Length: 271
Ligand code: DGL
Image 1 (tube, protein in one colour):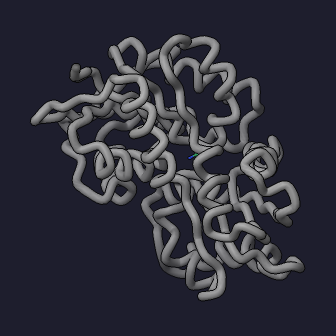
Image 2: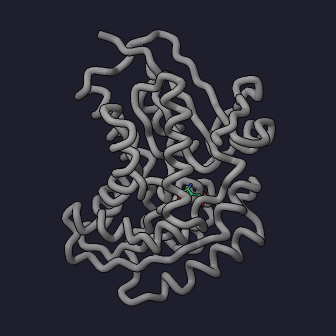
């Protein structure tokens, strides 16, 4: 049986398009609806209660578009995974924290693991807990919040002196920790667009890890297990943004790795 309903994906802004890119490659017959809550970005500096409320509203907007599963393509909002699962049951919901923790342990099974993420993700300690739960009980973990990375990435800035200065500001102290991280987990879906510059600062002995591919594998497994995969020959891709759809289409291209037709981006209000 084929289930042609789309998979819903959301983030505070365009960062989740890095996950969407991996999902589109991994699941070529699936349709997708992506929502970027661009009017209320960033989530990373907001309280856990506010992020939970925003995440619920975003997920419900996707449910209203008849999605068959919801992917929280945002680390900060993935901390609200239990609340979303409860609110949307029996609809399956997947976050990016567990796939990210698995990817970090695959890259450096004994660590040390460095985690760079938003303030909210670092404060919530979700990665520490997920790495421990995934078998890394004794893995040394060092965390660093990088609040400037999201506005820089949303600006479409991916290299140059401002980017390098911001990366050095956060990475220099993290890389100076003893023991030095062997794997550096990009614990925010906005960060993969800064990967080339982060790699230059981190150096060749640090493996950069992001959760996009492991998250896409988890979604592939889920649609298979639940028997809700699509075998459509042609799929549809749609985008929703809570502000500035034209800007979303222009800058979003950097994150998705392919052009976004502005005609496919609908302005929505989640309030
Ligand atoms: N992309 C989101 C994440 O993965 C957060 C960005 C924000 O602060 O809104 O955490």
